[in-house]
Length: 213
Length: 180
Image (cartoon, rainbow over all chains, first blue to last red):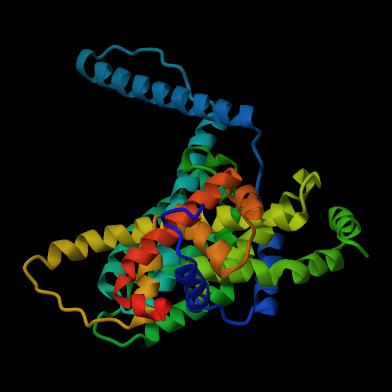
């Protein structure tokens, strides 16, 4: 028996008509292969096993607790003048915190640059992209000065991102799309998005600590 | 050389085998990415990410299913996650625009059938749209879709049926096209 929603004539027509939906261009095999090879050469992903993710989460909570403890202890010292012994943060744990922050920052930057490359051509406000690039630029420079910036590969990626973000932050809303095209071309040539993506492994952001760091 | 041998050579670090595996599958991956993303730059990004992940994780491919099925599971994950990120970003932009446009009347020209069809497909819920595009546009079977999306075959069929029903309602102005 035919389902009440079924309409063979409509379905036949729809299958034909829908072929025009997002009709693909010829596959750019060589360009993509070059970027894949380049990204794989530069990738630096450290896989964490599931139990290690829990360990990372536990370490993050521990560090946060120690941080709050130190902060409140310092406040007491100011008011009472007494010194209070406080647990120190292990170097490896504080590095981990920087890594978590770096991963979150990389995810935000990836979303921003992906949207910029797609939407800037569509005439979305250059001023808004410029404002967001300035915000990310501040974070990029903080990251470069943090312990996360001591990792040579991450530093190289951060420097590439800094360059792109500087260019976007200086976009002039009064000019045509030429500047946007130049920035997009530069991004493609420097392969910055594939490098960025290969630095961010799959998974929800809080457990993406295994990436590029 | 069959695909099992090719995969074994990729695992052994043979770069020519990597390229051969890429050549064998890239068209279908790119087509699906393009159909779902509707943008060449995004489709290229998603295709690249799919192959980067596939090569990195080839060690976890056990061969229980066809390599193409495994690869399309990665493709749909990469594309849908990527599109969600772009959508979230655009939504934030749209919220700002909405706030600015309060009180500004908007006029839209009546679109033609092709544009209306695109709008209607774009407006489908993500799950419906994905199944519709994979089945009716790209010709995947319900079994392939079920594995790629991690759902039962029956769920894929049900989502396709609902997608078509929604499209029929959305395109009812053009009923003469298919009744004729």
